Image (cartoon, rainbow, N blue to C red; front, side, top):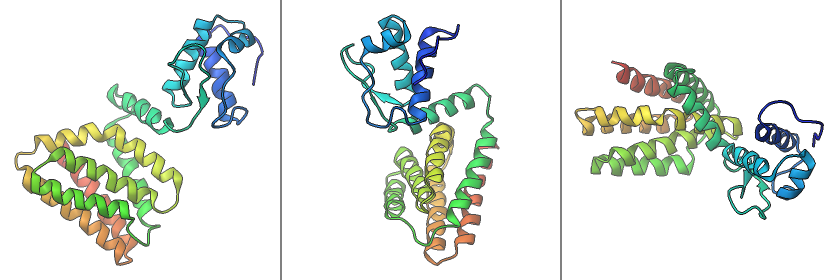
Length: 233
């Protein structure tokens, strides 16, 4: 871990940056306990309050756990919430206009179509999600339908074994979920909308099951673009 003198940036960010670099390069592996608060303060020649703030920064990034407990706690390195952290950052970028919604939708289309071209079967999680969609249609429950929709697409994206597909898809869906959920709420005939979307999901799954991966990729592109374009009108 780099212990050279810190730069003139806020000390808490400088400390968190050093620790983050050590986590990313493996010097502090997943599951490892960080040095105590006192040890970190001595290492970087800063106050313990600065160390606490640095650890909160790392926790917000999903890189450590336990940083919000008492000062005697020893936070551990974790990667469990890095996807949540990435989704929050991308969502913020979307809301402030740094990344247009259309660009994220375009990226999602490319990613999902590529993922579907690798599939030879529909994962159980995706089939279960379709079952939940059917129930949501019967109940006219837009929230339940949307949740099942998210699970369906994430399951398909990750089923081919490419971990990056699943991770990026999770981040993208989390970032644009609010926009898509809002569109469901705005539809005048919710029942017809949900039935149409259910049929599109079933057609995608059927294409994969029949070994028509290219057709499945085309269908998912039409499905995603169609819904977004409907939102834009």
